[in-house]
Length: 232
Image (cartoon, rainbow, N blue to C red; front, top):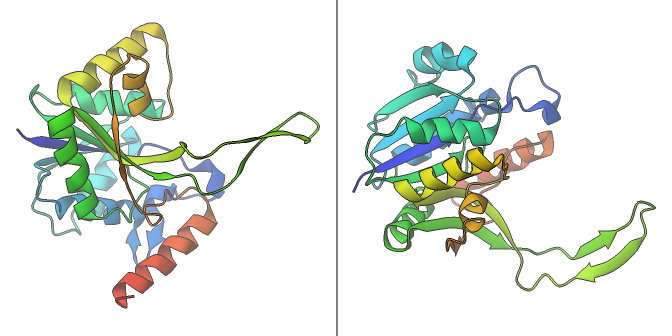
């Protein structure tokens, strides 16, 4: 059973207010996306990488971004869609092996550890679907339109979902096809299985697996990488 990793990186990163999309911003001398690709290359469970980027960036990714990396895993670069969900679906449709495991990851989560990818994939091989996440640490409040607190929500059973998210090929393809037919949009791929009543396991991740959305996230990622290099 082979594993195909879909790394989704077709966003514009408008919240960072930079001319360079966030996946190409340098993080300790390398584009953020390169760190992500290298992590998946180090994971022995991954057989192929599908890199989904904006169509206009395909040549840049093939000829410049990937050419500077020493990687053994085959990489295919694909054009993404209008939404993240569309980009993931394009990646799924490009896979011919219907017996495969499909692992989906945000290109701007560059600190994912290869061993965490492995754990997620191995669980999905057994259960069909598995994602990474962390229990919610902050207290949640329901607030009205006047910024007045209405109530506090019990966080005991609440988790924050992360990627990677790994699935048997047919499960995730069926879920995406059903969502497209119904006009349903979800913020992550696991939600598409949930709406079909299919079980999804969640494994404990780490707080370091952050998604770079703001400039503060980039600074934090830089600090974490520095500590890792120093062995702390």
